[in-house]
Every structure is written in structure tokens, then in C-alpha cells.
Image (cartoon, rainbow, N blue to C red):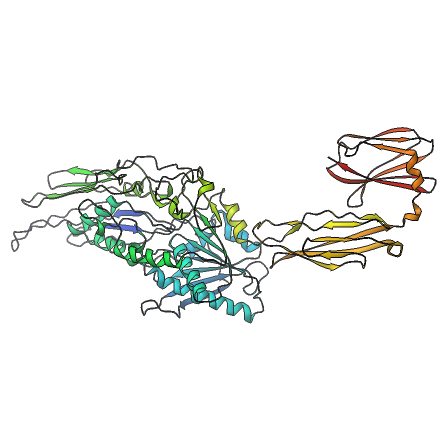
Length: 640
């Protein structure tokens, strides 16, 4: 923050000889760059004033610039009003590899954007942290980026735009022949976008509207409220009201936006007689969103940037976080900020505005005693204090005693319903958590708000991309006539929550499939001797995988059962060495065959006592085939 003081003496108004201009450029971005930043600009020479403009910082964490969109939908209009008003958004569409239309849509919404300054390029770069968008497009996912043109309006109003967008996307996919019966859309809501998309999905479900969303991802979203330090809010208000700084007034207007009032746990306007609280608009919004609840049809997951292990910010509740004190010939200025306390009466703001003129001193001390310690709580953080101290105020030095504060408490991002304690240890109490989400993702250390890290990218890829299921069963490929064959179909899926279904595509007449047990079974007869082809499929509703194999049916008339009287094989199961002993001398051919029908070992012997190593073989079922004088003996063994 940089204060520039211009002293103007006039004869017409002796009541106010000094005009103090505070030129402050304030950045408040509740999504992606949520910090409250204060930059100042010096006055020009003469009487002209250079007032700092309110804008968003484009400190994106992407890997490259946004490519040319496949389609661009400027000024997409919501067709559902909220409080008699609709809103618009600019939308960019990026097709996945090999696509010329929408097939697997992934929607990423914008969040809080006062002044509507964040470009859609910035939204792409945020989504492309750790190359996420690039990687997922290569896997065949189509991205739709939604940049709201009223980024600080009612959350419900932007929610209605998402409702209209989901309906439009389904219509496009249906007309292109790409809409399946199984939901295909993934909806990602970062920060305030998580509240917007939650409201939209619940609205559609309660009004019997099909949203076709299979996964909803809430990304460090304030389901139980957001936090901008209350002392910092009063710092803004003080210099806006007392110093009449145009920059501070403009910045404070953003704090007074509808969306900010709906999200902030403590709002400066609700501080009275030592009691802190939310603005009335937040109370109204909480009642409405809680009545709607959470989406019931899709899978819903929450990513938090805040620690799930009760790791706090590196300072205590009630501790001073910003120090600014200047005393000079023309003015004395003070702007000190403390973190909100934990239920203890503590000062959170100390302000002084005093010029060289008599009776011009204004002081202010704000104390609160009913707060929860949100400023230093575990949560997605932002380095507001450090950014405040980066600029030279022109008079004295602003000292950031600590860099960051909690912006989205972890218990808010994960919507932990059985506590309001911002320091709650989620990992320690994981088995007893009450949350509406199917899966929770959280780090050990606190991270910056909506940061995608090398540790979290795997979770995002897994939740967004639909991977094809993979068969895990190994079919036996050789059987004798008269012997029962049985194979239980099993498969795995990276998307472990998917419900898998099996289907026989080709079976020989002697095999049957039981859909209740997923077992293929049957007994071949002599007429079934030879090669029998089998093909089965597993599907997650969107993608399927086939398994094909042949079963070689041996006619048991070629097997002389009397040979077994002359052979001793042990132990079974075997872990290391298997012993094969013959009672008669002869030339023997011994084969070890795995369950896929591959010969993994073969020896010729005429000895009576033989040892064969199973040490290098994998655990599973094996067949030993012993042949001599046109006679064959088979035995099944288990390697453990």
C-alpha cells in the first residue's frame, strides 16, 4: 500500500485545510487469486489525482497460453431469471482428441470476479495447472469454460445460467447423436463456482430436470463460508470512510457486493458492540442452500487445499499480523491488524488518521470476543498480508508479520457437518466424519487456494476421466470331456465407484452364463472336442472391454487313467519344489501349463524320481501333463 499525501491550503474553507488522498488499488478475488491486495499509486505532480483502479491479478499457474477454442459462445444468456433478472457468460469450448463435437464434456466454471476482469484465458490457465486440461483433452475429454459476466452477482443468478447451459449441452449432444443413456458430463466448481454448481444441480433435481452430470467436483469451495480477515475489512472501511480515499471506497464496494456478503463468515458491516457476524444476505443464502442440500444423482467429491491434519497457519489466534505505524510532521498514520481471536476479547484493528491540522485526529479500535479463529485455521490460504507489505506506502513501512491467512477453512471446503471447529482434525476423526461428499481429497500441509499440486493431480484425473474397465479373471483354456468348466467373470476399474456389468457375446452351446453370479459354467461332451471360442464383455455404462479366449476340449478317451497308478506327485499346493516319482522306468515328457494355456516348463526324463522347481512361477493354477507311449496323464496344482 502506498499513501501519497497532498496538502492543499485554501482560504475559502478553514474547517478543512488538509486533504489526504489515499490511492489504493485493491484486489479481491475469491476464486483463484482470493487475496485482498492493496497497491498504491503516487499522485502526479500538480493537483491531478491518480486513483488506483480495482482489478484482478492474473497470476495464473498454467503451463502455456490458451489455445484457440474449438467453439466460442459469447454472451451466452440464461433463460431462467432470479429475482426477475438473468445473467450472461462468455463460454469457450475445447474439443478432446479426435472429436469434432461434444462427446465427453467437462465444464469448469468461473467464480467470484468483481468487475468481471478475469479473462477466459485466465480460467484456462488455472484449469491447466499440472497440464490437467491438456492431459485430459488427449484422453478424449471436451472442456467447456464458463466465464460469468456478472461475477459478483447473486450466486443463485449465476446458478440459473448453469442450469440453462446444462440443458443446452444435452440438446447439442442429442442432435449430434452423442448423448448416451448413462450420464456423461463432469461439472467442476472451483471456489464460489462450487456453490453455483451445487445450487444448479439441486435446483434441476428438485424440479425434475435432467442434468446428465455423472461427477460433480467441488474444488476448495466455501460450503460453510469463506474468510477474509475481519481486521483487514475494517482497515479498508477505516481508510475509505475517514480518509475518503477513492481507491479504498471502490475496493470496499467490492466487499459489499452481493456474492461477497453471501459467502463471508464475518463481514465488517455486522460487527457491533464487540460481536462479529455475517451480513444478512449470508443468512438468507445459507437458509436457501441448506434447504436444497446436495446433489443426489451424480457422484460428488470435494477437494480441499487446506490441511486435513489440523495444521494451522504459522501464528496464533489473536496475534498481530500486519503492523503499520508512521509519525511525521505532516501526518501520523496507523493501520494495525490482528487475527481474529478464539472466543476471547481481542483487538483486531487499530486505526489512526491525524494530519497537522488541529481537531483532525481520528482513531479507532475494533475489538471482538465471540469469533472462531478462522484467520489462522487450517484451510486453503492466500498471501494477502505479504502482498500488502510489498509496496512502499511513501511514509514509513508496512510490515507483514505473517504472509498468509486461511481463506477457505478445510471444514468448509469438505463440508464437515458434525463440527464448526475450524481446527478440527479431519484425518484423526475420518471414520466419524459427517459429510455429504462421496470422497474427500485433502493435503497434509495448507496449500494456496485452488492450487492443483503434483499430489492432487492424480485425484483430478481419476475423477474427471472415465477409464475403461479391465478384466482381472484368468480363464482356463484346456479341459477334458466330462469335466465341469467354471469361470467367474471379474474386472477392475480405475473409477472404482462405477457399477460394472458383464455380457456374454459368444459362448459354445455347452456353456451357460449366470447373470446373478457372473459365472460361466458347463460340461463338454465328446462332440465338443477341439477349439471352443468364448467372448465376453464388461461395461461401466460408457466404455466397455472385451475378453476373447479359446477353450481346448480334450477327448478323455486319449487319457489312460491307469497311468495314474504308476505316478506320485506331491506336494499340492506347492510353493517351491514339486516331486514327481514313477514306479516304472520309461521315457516321460513333462509339461507345466499355466491357466492361459502357455507351457511354462517342459522336461524329458527317464528317471524314477524327479524334482521340478515352481520357485519362479507366479501364484495361481497350473496343469502338469505327463505323456508316454501315447498315453497322457494330467493333474491340476496350485502354486502359492
